[in-house]
Image (cartoon, rainbow over all chains, first blue to last red):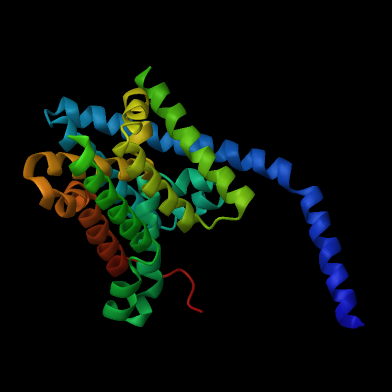
Length: 151
Length: 118
């Protein structure tokens, strides 16, 4: 009986949560994501133009921009600023390449106490690993498609 | 104007990810995987170039732009060195970013300590 009550209670609670929260928080989350994500991309554009002005080629400027944003993401993660921002900004801080750095640095620091091989070394690609794996597999598909049909 | 376009493009890409996360309960890691794969395939189909032409860094800085680099890299490499390019192109184009992430990630792990010791 108690179990049954517990179930209904959970259901009621779930309904309540659904009623009260989604719309407002979704809008708020989206606004945060838009402004933080857009802001990071604007910084990226600034860096990109800066590197181009320093006579780097288009390709080099893009890579340098990524590297700089990765560095900043790593530094701000280490200083515990990036994750505080992430609590509010959600996808706005996760999706830019600095968030990719964050996904590498955060577990690396967290698992440090398990050692430099099985802690840092193994966990560093906890989240970035799947991203790279599936990205590479997709690039192979694109490569095969381009080889046979594209050129 | 270039900056405004980058801001808007990047903002919209992040909002789409936010909606995916909030509405479908997708974990962030899944969204990132979807974005990279989508970026790679869209680039392969020649569609993402339009987004990059419009949005500049707004299209290349989000992780979907990592897919753009992968897709472009593999196609360039196939055009240059043929079949083998299928295996080397993607990694080559993203080597700088990935290696930088490993380097900075490792250095950060050495320098900084986890905040809570529990």
